[in-house]
Structures are given as C-alpha cells and as structure tokens.
Amino acid sequence: MVMTELKARRRSLTILGATGSVGRSTLDVVGQHPGEYSLHALTAHKSSDELLRLCQLHEPSIAVLSGTREDPELRRRLREAGCRTELLFGEAGLLQAVEGCDTVMAAIVGAAGLAPTIRAASLGKQVLLANKEALVMAGPLFMRAVRTASAVLLPIDSEHNALFQCLPSDGQGRVSMAEVRRILLTASGGPFRTASPERLETVTPDEACAHPNWSMGRKISVDSATMMNKGLEVIEARWLFDVEPERIEVVIHPQSIIHSLVDYVDGSVLAQLSNPDMRVPIAHALAYPRRMASGVKPLDLAAIGQLTFEPPDMGRFPCLRLAYSALHAGGTASAILNAANEIAVEAFLNGRLGFTSIAKVIEEALCRVSASEADSLEAVLEADRKARDFASGMVLAREGRAA
Image 1 (cartoon, one colour):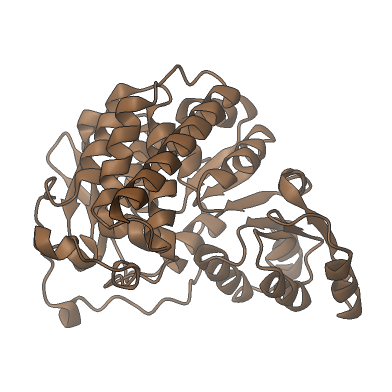
Image 2: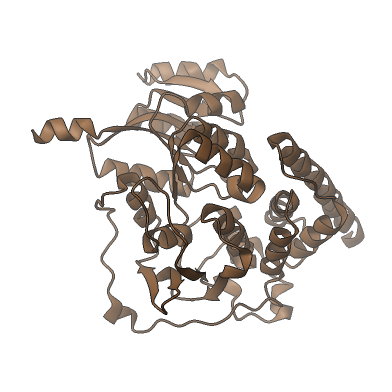
C-alpha cells in the first residue's frame, strides 16, 4: 500500500539551469527522497563537463546545452559514459525540455530563462519559479499564461516563498490578498550595508561576490551587493501576488533569518523563519501542499541571539530606487531595467566597469531607451535588445574615457 501511494505521487521533473546553485540544491533535495521524483530533463548553458557528470549520476531522459551548437563529440562522450540520455542543443532544446514532464524548476539566471519558463506555464505545468526575470520582464504575459493554462506557480526565491507560506492559499498555488495591508521583503543589505560612498568606488568583483549569508552565483551575488536583487524581487512580488507597488516594502534584516513578512489588516504580522539555505524553499515547493525534509539544520534562535531591522538606504543603493521607478513606469520599463543591469553587471565582473557605475548605466538606459506596452513577448524581447545595445555602448564609452 505504501509503495502504491509513493508511485502515485512520483513526479517527473525538469531542471532548467541544473548546474547553477539552485539546480544543484534541487538535485540535493530530490536525492534525499528517492522514488518520489524522476528526472525528465537537466539543462545547462555551456557547462558541458558538469552536465555530462550529472547525466552519468542521474540519467535524465533529456539533457540540453542551450548555449552550444550541435556537437557530435559531446554525443560521443555521453554514449561512451554509458548514458542513454538524449542530448539536445540551443534554445529549441530548452523548449523541448519542458514538455513531457509534470514539474519544471525554472532556475536559469537572466533573460535566457524567459522563453522556456513561459512555455512551461502555457503548457499547464507545475512551475517552480526561481527565474525572477520571467516576471520582471514579462509579468502580465507570464501571469496570463499561468491563468489561461491553469498552471500551478510556486515561488522559489526565499523571500517570495516566505510570503507564499504566510498567505492563505488554496492548495493549487493561488493566494488571497484580501485581508493583507502590506507585504515586507527582507534584505540582508549584502556585503556593503555600512560601507562609505568612497569605499563603494573601489569595490572589486571578488568583494561584491562575498555575500555574508548566502552562497550564490556571481551575477546574483553582485545584484545582492547593489540591492538590485531586492528591486527585481519587488517587481516580481507585484505580479506574483497581484499587489500594488505601494503595498510592497523592503526592510534590511542583516541576519537573513526572517525571509519575509505579511502584515494583515487586523495588526497581525506573520513571518517565515529558517536558516539561510535555498533547500528550504525548494523542498517546500517540491512537496507542496505537503511538507518534506530539506536536509537543512533546525533553526536555533537562542544561538542567533537577536534579530535586527533597519530601513534601506536609497542613497547607498540607487538600484533599489531604480527598480521601483521602472515598476511605476510600467510597460517594458522593467525589461529595460533588467537588460541594462545584466550588461552592467557582466561588465563589472569582467573588470570593465566600476561598481558604482552599474546603477549609472541602468539609470541612463531607463532615461534614453523608450518603453512601450508590454503586450507581447516580441515587444518585451525588442525592449530587451535595445536596452542591451544601449548599455553595451555606454560601457564602451566609459572604457574609452577611462583609457
């Protein structure tokens, strides 16, 4: 009887971005519950060696290298390793990976994850959303696809997952905001929470990536250091929970123990607490509406001692202000914000742009690239392209002045 029930709830899983930090954490959680999940597809951008290793270890039905053209040598290596996994290439492979499964972990960082994530929603899948850009760039389009196909959307960002856990839901991923006064997204403040303006001028990529609480990829770590990550999360929350920007607040919480809070109209405030480990929201979403072990150690409040809070400094973190501005502007402004940020962060990580210039590139892009109605995926992608071209030009111009 137990085995019959186990087999009945066994779900096939695709992990978009399997070699990243969220993908690896997802595989860790899945590995703790053998028999509950089968791996349909694993994808990576260009990390071929790591993807081949994961194929040997997990034997998914499909593997995708989205940033690599057809490569017979990789196919040969996969066969010689004894894997029966089908190897696909390019964006078409990503779109194919979300078919034939029940659940999609959307963990590709950046705009590259937009098309397959929307495709998964339009197919009515259970979408575990770690790719915040799907909502930042195309919030109305993405949520329309979710509603039209009756997809189950479960947030993976620790803050949005915390809000989801504190809001009343129907077991199908739908929450009610009727009795909510406001939602509060917590932010650690990153490694430069108390840094002087002079100090910020000399920040190096390695320093920006040294987050005090979380272990993340380099792009997300820089976004956390500039607080653009929190700005993107504000935009994400607006669409995910269908809540007005004025009811979304950010509070600095350096300990990263309370991941978000919901303030109800009767004065009650509910919070979700856990150690800062992405396996907590991943396990919650994988098991929803049940609960299952994540492998994260229990929270010891006595050992932590105290939890502190402070308002964000918009002067020190202009990227947060810019995100609110883009959200209020509407249309494709958020896509422009996201694209310019991706270009600026990449330039910073490559030593081509200063840390404080990231916000300057983004602000200039928002001023100079015209926003339009975000009424189609084509319009969103066109805004993304124009913003990338403009931001890339600004980086080159700043390099020329520096030389």
